[in-house]
Image (cartoon, rainbow, N blue to C red; front, side, top):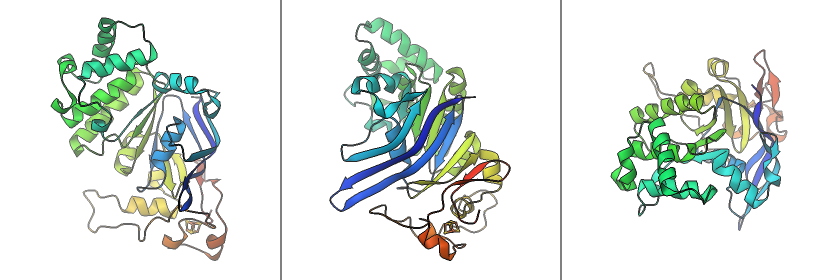
Length: 316
Ligand code: SF4
């Protein structure tokens, strides 16, 4: 496998009336072709901002530093036209709530026609609908749904339609931002199984952004655990779940509920504010293994153990 997406020292800062908010800090991450990478962490840790930074979908008050390379191209240096072409065609993103992305006044068929014509204005409606039927079949949606409005579909069907819209141009990378949060657990598993099967059909990689560790354990090849805008730990899924090394990862895994859970656990305390500059390890106030050095010196990520896992913690 070779690198499809390479993030190097990527940082995103939002200018706000209260001061700069460092939403993503110095993130380096690689996604290989044909793999699923899970990006996990609590709400507000920068996961979605990272996903949007890859597609350059950030608001105007955002400043991005570092580099994003997709299939060898420098994404941050592309012109507005080049990035529009890249989005949808090579890089696509699905969001948590499809109702906010689908136009309630447009039938499903018109969403497909509009999306196809945005990249290729000369395509006739009949051709666009044939393509739509093909991708809908791939995500197991009957073609009679093309005549319906979004509100006439169930939540699971709407998310499948969103995935089908993303697949129209066979993107090499799909960024799935909490794609199943609005669904119940059975639909959640069905959508993830669907993503797993079509990524093979479409030779596609997936960046799965979620707070659900169970989904990541089941579906991803690698995991990156984000905390306070930084990657705390990153590595292959099985060893990371078997033996988490960063105290934050250990706490997150302890808080997963399964059939053997006898008492509930959650990581004590709250994630830190990302406003302004901070020194030391961001997990310091919540860490039960903290040492004096942790308060003032940030632990640079380093390779640890035989599975070459990256961990940002002074314990290693
Ligand atoms: S660097 Fe220190 S405070 Fe941070 S996670 Fe490691 S032990 Fe805990």
